[in-house]
Length: 248
Image (cartoon, rainbow, N blue to C red; front, side):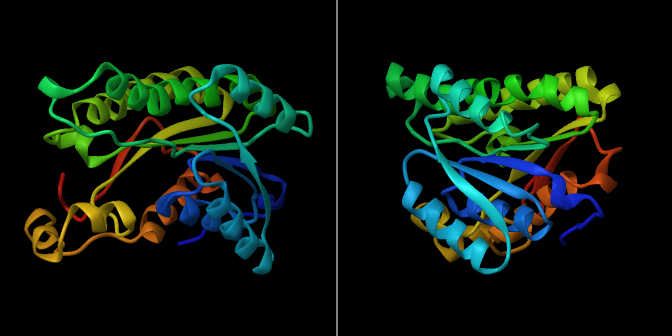
């Protein structure tokens, strides 16, 4: 479902982690809703650019911005450049990485990099946008989490720690910003079709894990996010919404 509103053309959205399967779908959904989309990428900007080219071919608008969300200085500089043209109305913090290992054998670098991208990246991307959102009295912040943060998962203590920390951060920020017309919500996908799921699960495993008996589609996650970013979702705030086929 794409929720299109009368002033959607004026909205500008920043999507972090825009080169992954879900990130590409989020950018497409927001562009279809009329937003100008900044698609942030680091590891695979070429894929983000290909997705942006397709968005433009369909009549949407936006551009790719390349920087490391875990680096505070480069993120702030990139966001200040975007803000020079006006406020960013929508932030979808989708950036995140896996570096799986049992905690007993996990290296310090594995722990820190996963935390840096998901949790510190949330601060780096969100904090500079809050006062401009407050001044315009409109803002939509959606944070991508995971069913792993709700259920736990072997080999993903670092990933689950980072994602579950975002739940508390989002709920607290929602309370801070609600009176200014800014909502903050979390979307927690389960097994979603794409390169990561294909590498981790076969069809039999998915049928066993997911009550719905199938993997979700990136577009199903993006549709929920597009709704949360719309004007009609103004009273949905501080929520963790699972898109997981009944896993949690």
